[in-house]
Image (cartoon, rainbow, N blue to C red; front, side, top):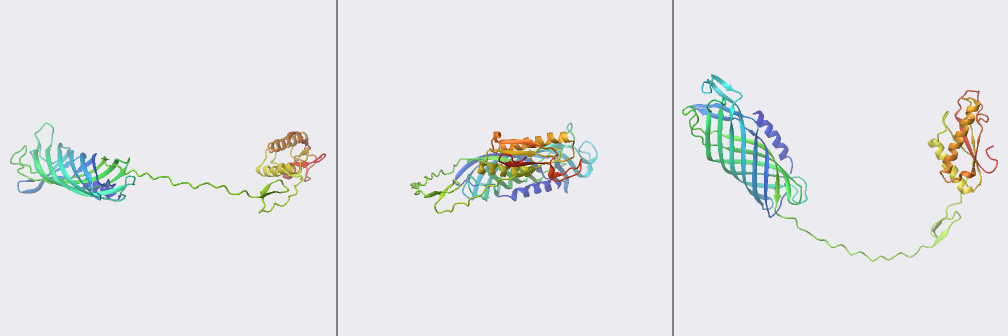
Length: 388
Protein backbone atom coordinates (compact mmCIF):
# COMPACT_ATOMS: atom_id res chain seq x y z
CA UNK A 1 0.00 0.00 0.00
CA UNK A 2 2.90 2.38 0.60
CA UNK A 3 4.06 1.99 -3.02
CA UNK A 4 0.49 2.50 -4.27
CA UNK A 5 0.21 5.79 -2.37
CA UNK A 6 3.47 7.00 -3.92
CA UNK A 7 2.24 6.12 -7.40
CA UNK A 8 -1.07 7.95 -6.92
CA UNK A 9 0.78 11.06 -5.68
CA UNK A 10 2.97 11.05 -8.78
CA UNK A 11 0.03 10.56 -11.10
CA UNK A 12 -1.85 13.52 -9.60
CA UNK A 13 0.91 15.86 -10.82
CA UNK A 14 0.46 14.52 -14.36
CA UNK A 15 -3.31 14.96 -14.38
CA UNK A 16 -3.02 18.55 -13.18
CA UNK A 17 -1.42 19.77 -16.43
CA UNK A 18 -2.94 20.13 -20.07
CA UNK A 19 -1.38 17.37 -25.07
CA UNK A 20 -0.45 18.76 -28.19
CA UNK A 21 -2.72 17.69 -31.04
CA UNK A 22 -1.42 16.87 -34.51
CA UNK A 23 -4.68 16.79 -36.44
CA UNK A 24 -4.81 14.33 -39.34
CA UNK A 25 -1.25 13.04 -38.85
CA UNK A 26 0.20 9.60 -37.95
CA UNK A 27 2.83 9.34 -35.25
CA UNK A 28 5.21 6.87 -33.59
CA UNK A 29 7.01 6.97 -30.27
CA UNK A 30 8.75 5.22 -27.41
CA UNK A 31 8.67 5.60 -23.64
CA UNK A 32 10.43 4.19 -20.59
CA UNK A 33 10.19 4.67 -16.84
CA UNK A 34 9.80 3.32 -13.32
CA UNK A 35 7.07 0.90 -12.23
CA UNK A 36 5.48 -0.20 -8.96
CA UNK A 37 3.74 -3.60 -8.71
CA UNK A 38 0.92 -3.90 -6.18
CA UNK A 39 1.16 -6.85 -3.78
CA UNK A 40 0.06 -10.08 -5.53
CA UNK A 41 -2.15 -12.36 -3.41
CA UNK A 42 -2.64 -16.13 -3.94
CA UNK A 43 -5.15 -18.61 -2.52
CA UNK A 44 -3.97 -21.86 -0.95
CA UNK A 45 -6.65 -24.48 -1.01
CA UNK A 46 -9.70 -22.94 0.61
CA UNK A 47 -7.69 -20.20 2.32
CA UNK A 48 -8.21 -16.86 0.62
CA UNK A 49 -5.16 -14.53 0.24
CA UNK A 50 -2.96 -17.02 2.10
CA UNK A 51 0.21 -16.04 0.26
CA UNK A 52 1.35 -12.54 -0.71
CA UNK A 53 4.25 -11.51 -2.94
CA UNK A 54 5.83 -8.05 -2.67
CA UNK A 55 8.10 -6.57 -5.38
CA UNK A 56 10.93 -4.09 -5.64
CA UNK A 57 10.59 -1.13 -7.99
CA UNK A 58 10.74 -2.26 -11.61
CA UNK A 59 10.72 -0.81 -15.09
CA UNK A 60 8.14 -0.31 -17.82
CA UNK A 61 8.92 0.39 -21.49
CA UNK A 62 6.81 0.62 -24.62
CA UNK A 63 6.76 1.52 -28.31
CA UNK A 64 3.60 2.75 -30.01
CA UNK A 65 2.15 3.97 -33.30
CA UNK A 66 -1.06 5.92 -33.78
CA UNK A 67 -3.13 8.38 -35.73
CA UNK A 68 -4.44 11.76 -34.60
CA UNK A 69 -8.07 12.32 -35.59
CA UNK A 70 -8.26 15.74 -33.96
CA UNK A 71 -9.37 15.77 -30.34
CA UNK A 72 -9.32 11.94 -30.30
CA UNK A 73 -6.34 9.65 -31.01
CA UNK A 74 -6.06 5.86 -31.50
CA UNK A 75 -2.83 3.91 -31.16
CA UNK A 76 -1.33 0.42 -30.94
CA UNK A 77 1.12 -0.13 -28.07
CA UNK A 78 3.58 -2.95 -27.33
CA UNK A 79 5.09 -2.91 -23.85
CA UNK A 80 7.21 -4.95 -21.47
CA UNK A 81 7.24 -4.70 -17.68
CA UNK A 82 9.52 -6.37 -15.19
CA UNK A 83 10.06 -6.24 -11.42
CA UNK A 84 12.03 -8.45 -9.01
CA UNK A 85 10.37 -10.16 -6.05
CA UNK A 86 11.24 -8.50 -2.76
CA UNK A 87 9.44 -10.58 -0.08
CA UNK A 88 6.98 -13.44 0.42
CA UNK A 89 4.48 -13.49 3.28
CA UNK A 90 2.15 -16.34 4.32
CA UNK A 91 -0.82 -16.49 6.63
CA UNK A 92 0.55 -19.52 8.47
CA UNK A 93 4.04 -20.89 9.04
CA UNK A 94 4.96 -23.43 6.37
CA UNK A 95 8.00 -25.54 5.51
CA UNK A 96 7.76 -25.40 1.76
CA UNK A 97 10.34 -22.62 1.57
CA UNK A 98 13.16 -24.51 3.19
CA UNK A 99 12.38 -23.45 6.73
CA UNK A 100 9.39 -23.06 9.04
CA UNK A 101 8.41 -19.38 8.72
CA UNK A 102 5.68 -16.91 7.80
CA UNK A 103 7.80 -14.19 6.20
CA UNK A 104 10.69 -14.54 3.78
CA UNK A 105 12.43 -11.21 3.24
CA UNK A 106 14.39 -11.00 1.08
CA UNK A 107 13.00 -13.44 -1.45
CA UNK A 108 13.92 -14.25 -5.05
CA UNK A 109 12.05 -14.30 -8.32
CA UNK A 110 10.53 -11.85 -10.76
CA UNK A 111 7.36 -10.88 -12.57
CA UNK A 112 7.53 -10.19 -16.29
CA UNK A 113 4.60 -8.95 -18.42
CA UNK A 114 4.44 -8.43 -22.17
CA UNK A 115 1.32 -6.81 -23.63
CA UNK A 116 -0.28 -5.56 -26.86
CA UNK A 117 -2.86 -2.80 -26.26
CA UNK A 118 -5.28 -0.74 -28.35
CA UNK A 119 -5.53 2.73 -26.80
CA UNK A 120 -7.97 5.60 -27.23
CA UNK A 121 -6.82 9.04 -26.04
CA UNK A 122 -8.50 12.43 -25.70
CA UNK A 123 -6.34 15.56 -26.09
CA UNK A 124 -7.08 18.82 -24.33
CA UNK A 125 -5.33 22.15 -23.96
CA UNK A 126 -3.36 24.05 -26.57
CA UNK A 127 -4.05 22.55 -30.01
CA UNK A 128 -1.11 23.92 -32.01
CA UNK A 129 2.26 22.98 -33.45
CA UNK A 130 3.99 25.70 -31.45
CA UNK A 131 1.86 25.50 -28.33
CA UNK A 132 2.95 25.05 -24.74
CA UNK A 133 2.40 22.14 -22.39
CA UNK A 134 -0.93 20.37 -22.96
CA UNK A 135 -2.53 17.16 -21.72
CA UNK A 136 -4.22 13.87 -22.64
CA UNK A 137 -6.18 11.14 -20.89
CA UNK A 138 -7.53 7.78 -22.02
CA UNK A 139 -7.34 4.02 -21.74
CA UNK A 140 -6.80 0.80 -23.59
CA UNK A 141 -7.60 -2.91 -23.79
CA UNK A 142 -5.57 -5.83 -25.08
CA UNK A 143 -3.78 -9.07 -24.30
CA UNK A 144 -0.98 -9.75 -21.81
CA UNK A 145 1.50 -12.63 -21.39
CA UNK A 146 2.71 -13.02 -17.79
CA UNK A 147 5.60 -15.02 -16.26
CA UNK A 148 5.95 -15.18 -12.45
CA UNK A 149 8.61 -16.92 -10.38
CA UNK A 150 9.02 -16.67 -6.60
CA UNK A 151 11.07 -18.52 -4.04
CA UNK A 152 12.82 -18.14 -0.73
CA UNK A 153 16.38 -18.95 -1.80
CA UNK A 154 18.38 -19.02 -5.01
CA UNK A 155 19.51 -22.63 -4.40
CA UNK A 156 16.03 -24.05 -3.74
CA UNK A 157 13.08 -24.69 -6.05
CA UNK A 158 10.71 -21.80 -6.60
CA UNK A 159 7.39 -21.84 -4.78
CA UNK A 160 5.75 -20.37 -7.86
CA UNK A 161 7.00 -20.83 -11.42
CA UNK A 162 4.19 -20.32 -13.85
CA UNK A 163 3.22 -18.44 -16.96
CA UNK A 164 0.11 -17.43 -18.83
CA UNK A 165 0.37 -17.01 -22.60
CA UNK A 166 -2.69 -14.83 -23.16
CA UNK A 167 -4.99 -12.99 -20.74
CA UNK A 168 -7.22 -9.96 -21.05
CA UNK A 169 -5.68 -6.69 -19.85
CA UNK A 170 -6.80 -3.10 -19.56
CA UNK A 171 -5.15 0.16 -18.61
CA UNK A 172 -5.76 3.85 -17.88
CA UNK A 173 -3.25 6.53 -18.94
CA UNK A 174 -2.88 10.28 -18.50
CA UNK A 175 -0.06 12.65 -19.28
CA UNK A 176 1.33 15.84 -20.74
CA UNK A 177 3.24 16.70 -23.93
CA UNK A 178 5.59 19.53 -24.84
CA UNK A 179 6.61 20.32 -28.42
CA UNK A 180 10.39 20.30 -28.85
CA UNK A 181 10.29 20.86 -32.64
CA UNK A 182 7.41 21.02 -35.16
CA UNK A 183 7.61 17.19 -35.40
CA UNK A 184 8.96 15.98 -32.03
CA UNK A 185 7.16 16.03 -28.66
CA UNK A 186 8.46 15.14 -25.21
CA UNK A 187 5.91 13.21 -23.12
CA UNK A 188 5.39 12.45 -19.44
CA UNK A 189 2.78 9.75 -18.76
CA UNK A 190 1.18 7.91 -15.84
CA UNK A 191 -0.11 4.35 -16.57
CA UNK A 192 -2.29 2.04 -14.44
CA UNK A 193 -2.20 -1.51 -15.86
CA UNK A 194 -4.39 -4.45 -14.80
CA UNK A 195 -4.42 -8.12 -15.86
CA UNK A 196 -5.55 -11.42 -14.36
CA UNK A 197 -3.36 -14.27 -15.64
CA UNK A 198 -4.60 -17.87 -15.59
CA UNK A 199 -1.88 -19.76 -13.74
CA UNK A 200 -2.19 -23.58 -13.70
CA UNK A 201 0.44 -25.29 -11.58
CA UNK A 202 3.63 -24.44 -9.69
CA UNK A 203 6.88 -25.95 -8.51
CA UNK A 204 4.88 -27.65 -5.72
CA UNK A 205 1.81 -29.29 -7.36
CA UNK A 206 -1.08 -29.63 -4.97
CA UNK A 207 0.24 -26.85 -2.72
CA UNK A 208 -0.91 -24.03 -4.99
CA UNK A 209 -3.38 -25.23 -7.57
CA UNK A 210 -5.12 -23.36 -10.32
CA UNK A 211 -5.35 -19.67 -9.38
CA UNK A 212 -6.01 -16.33 -11.05
CA UNK A 213 -4.19 -13.59 -9.12
CA UNK A 214 -4.77 -9.96 -10.03
CA UNK A 215 -1.64 -8.12 -11.15
CA UNK A 216 -1.79 -4.34 -11.06
CA UNK A 217 1.06 -1.93 -11.84
CA UNK A 218 1.62 1.84 -11.69
CA UNK A 219 4.20 3.47 -13.98
CA UNK A 220 5.63 6.94 -14.56
CA UNK A 221 7.06 7.11 -18.10
CA UNK A 222 9.03 9.65 -20.06
CA UNK A 223 9.19 9.45 -23.85
CA UNK A 224 9.43 11.03 -27.28
CA UNK A 225 6.80 11.15 -30.03
CA UNK A 226 7.54 11.80 -33.71
CA UNK A 227 4.67 13.29 -35.73
CA UNK A 228 4.72 12.69 -39.49
CA UNK A 229 2.49 15.66 -40.23
CA UNK A 230 3.90 19.10 -40.91
CA UNK A 231 2.56 22.53 -39.97
CA UNK A 232 1.16 24.49 -42.91
CA UNK A 233 3.52 27.10 -44.25
CA UNK A 234 1.68 30.37 -44.66
CA UNK A 235 3.50 32.99 -46.71
CA UNK A 236 2.29 36.46 -45.92
CA UNK A 237 3.36 38.98 -48.53
CA UNK A 238 4.80 42.16 -47.11
CA UNK A 239 2.44 45.09 -46.97
CA UNK A 240 3.12 47.74 -49.62
CA UNK A 241 5.13 50.62 -48.25
CA UNK A 242 3.59 54.07 -48.76
CA UNK A 243 5.56 56.44 -50.93
CA UNK A 244 7.58 58.81 -48.83
CA UNK A 245 6.83 62.46 -49.38
CA UNK A 246 9.23 64.75 -47.51
CA UNK A 247 7.53 67.46 -45.50
CA UNK A 248 7.98 71.08 -46.59
CA UNK A 249 10.87 72.89 -44.89
CA UNK A 250 10.02 74.74 -41.72
CA UNK A 251 10.99 78.45 -41.59
CA UNK A 252 13.60 79.06 -38.92
CA UNK A 253 15.10 81.97 -37.00
CA UNK A 254 18.46 82.56 -35.31
CA UNK A 255 18.29 83.56 -31.63
CA UNK A 256 20.74 85.91 -29.86
CA UNK A 257 22.38 82.90 -28.20
CA UNK A 258 23.17 81.44 -31.65
CA UNK A 259 20.54 78.66 -31.63
CA UNK A 260 18.32 78.13 -34.68
CA UNK A 261 14.65 77.39 -33.96
CA UNK A 262 11.37 77.42 -35.95
CA UNK A 263 9.74 80.81 -36.37
CA UNK A 264 6.71 79.45 -34.53
CA UNK A 265 8.78 79.17 -31.33
CA UNK A 266 10.07 81.93 -29.04
CA UNK A 267 13.77 82.42 -28.49
CA UNK A 268 14.91 81.68 -24.96
CA UNK A 269 15.69 84.72 -22.80
CA UNK A 270 19.28 85.93 -22.78
CA UNK A 271 20.95 84.72 -19.62
CA UNK A 272 23.63 86.94 -18.14
CA UNK A 273 26.43 84.57 -17.17
CA UNK A 274 27.51 84.27 -13.57
CA UNK A 275 30.93 85.94 -13.30
CA UNK A 276 31.69 84.20 -10.03
CA UNK A 277 33.45 83.86 -7.76
CA UNK A 278 32.81 80.14 -7.31
CA UNK A 279 33.89 78.37 -4.11
CA UNK A 280 34.36 74.62 -3.65
CA UNK A 281 35.11 72.94 -0.32
CA UNK A 282 37.20 69.87 0.58
CA UNK A 283 37.27 67.17 3.23
CA UNK A 284 39.86 67.47 6.02
CA UNK A 285 43.40 66.85 4.81
CA UNK A 286 42.10 65.90 1.34
CA UNK A 287 42.33 67.36 -2.15
CA UNK A 288 39.77 65.07 -3.83
CA UNK A 289 36.93 66.68 -5.78
CA UNK A 290 33.69 65.78 -4.00
CA UNK A 291 30.39 65.33 -5.91
CA UNK A 292 29.18 68.66 -4.48
CA UNK A 293 32.34 70.41 -5.63
CA UNK A 294 32.04 68.80 -9.10
CA UNK A 295 28.60 70.33 -9.60
CA UNK A 296 29.92 73.81 -8.75
CA UNK A 297 32.95 73.38 -11.02
CA UNK A 298 30.66 72.37 -13.91
CA UNK A 299 28.84 75.69 -13.47
CA UNK A 300 32.15 77.55 -13.38
CA UNK A 301 33.28 75.90 -16.63
CA UNK A 302 29.97 76.84 -18.30
CA UNK A 303 30.33 80.42 -17.06
CA UNK A 304 33.82 80.63 -18.53
CA UNK A 305 32.52 79.57 -21.95
CA UNK A 306 29.84 82.29 -21.83
CA UNK A 307 31.97 85.12 -20.50
CA UNK A 308 34.97 84.46 -22.75
CA UNK A 309 37.35 85.66 -19.99
CA UNK A 310 41.00 85.13 -20.86
CA UNK A 311 42.15 84.29 -17.34
CA UNK A 312 40.89 82.10 -14.50
CA UNK A 313 42.47 82.39 -11.07
CA UNK A 314 42.33 79.56 -8.52
CA UNK A 315 43.09 80.45 -4.91
CA UNK A 316 43.71 77.46 -2.64
CA UNK A 317 43.18 77.61 1.13
CA UNK A 318 43.45 75.34 4.20
CA UNK A 319 42.26 75.40 7.79
CA UNK A 320 44.61 75.74 10.82
CA UNK A 321 44.67 72.09 11.85
CA UNK A 322 48.18 71.46 10.47
CA UNK A 323 51.49 73.26 10.27
CA UNK A 324 51.69 76.42 8.13
CA UNK A 325 54.16 74.88 5.65
CA UNK A 326 52.08 71.72 5.29
CA UNK A 327 48.91 73.73 4.74
CA UNK A 328 50.54 75.75 1.92
CA UNK A 329 51.32 72.50 0.10
CA UNK A 330 47.83 71.14 0.81
CA UNK A 331 46.15 74.28 -0.54
CA UNK A 332 48.34 74.03 -3.68
CA UNK A 333 47.25 70.43 -4.23
CA UNK A 334 43.64 71.50 -3.93
CA UNK A 335 44.14 74.29 -6.50
CA UNK A 336 45.87 71.80 -8.85
CA UNK A 337 42.96 69.36 -8.51
CA UNK A 338 40.48 72.10 -9.47
CA UNK A 339 42.70 73.12 -12.38
CA UNK A 340 42.75 69.55 -13.74
CA UNK A 341 38.98 69.26 -13.41
CA UNK A 342 38.30 72.56 -15.25
CA UNK A 343 40.76 71.65 -18.00
CA UNK A 344 38.79 68.48 -18.54
CA UNK A 345 35.64 70.59 -18.94
CA UNK A 346 36.94 72.76 -21.77
CA UNK A 347 38.75 75.55 -19.88
CA UNK A 348 42.22 76.00 -21.47
CA UNK A 349 44.96 75.03 -19.04
CA UNK A 350 47.05 77.99 -20.18
CA UNK A 351 44.27 80.38 -19.10
CA UNK A 352 44.32 79.09 -15.49
CA UNK A 353 46.60 80.50 -12.79
CA UNK A 354 46.86 79.04 -9.27
CA UNK A 355 47.89 80.49 -5.92
CA UNK A 356 48.35 78.67 -2.61
CA UNK A 357 47.55 80.72 0.53
CA UNK A 358 47.62 77.89 3.07
CA UNK A 359 45.98 78.99 6.34
CA UNK A 360 46.80 82.67 5.92
CA UNK A 361 43.37 83.77 4.63
CA UNK A 362 40.70 81.89 6.57
CA UNK A 363 37.08 82.40 5.65
CA UNK A 364 36.26 81.82 9.33
CA UNK A 365 38.80 82.97 11.94
CA UNK A 366 39.67 80.13 14.32
CA UNK A 367 42.34 79.28 16.82
CA UNK A 368 45.39 77.35 15.64
CA UNK A 369 44.74 73.62 15.26
CA UNK A 370 40.95 73.95 14.70
CA UNK A 371 39.40 72.01 11.80
CA UNK A 372 37.04 74.43 10.08
CA UNK A 373 35.27 73.07 6.92
CA UNK A 374 34.72 76.50 5.37
CA UNK A 375 38.46 77.25 5.43
CA UNK A 376 39.28 74.15 3.37
CA UNK A 377 38.40 75.64 -0.02
CA UNK A 378 39.40 76.86 -3.48
CA UNK A 379 37.98 80.09 -4.87
CA UNK A 380 37.54 80.43 -8.66
CA UNK A 381 37.39 83.93 -10.14
CA UNK A 382 37.63 85.32 -13.68
CA UNK A 383 39.78 88.22 -14.90
CA UNK A 384 43.27 89.55 -14.22
CA UNK A 385 44.16 89.99 -10.56
CA UNK A 386 41.19 88.13 -9.25
CA UNK A 387 41.52 85.74 -6.38
CA UNK A 388 44.56 87.46 -4.88
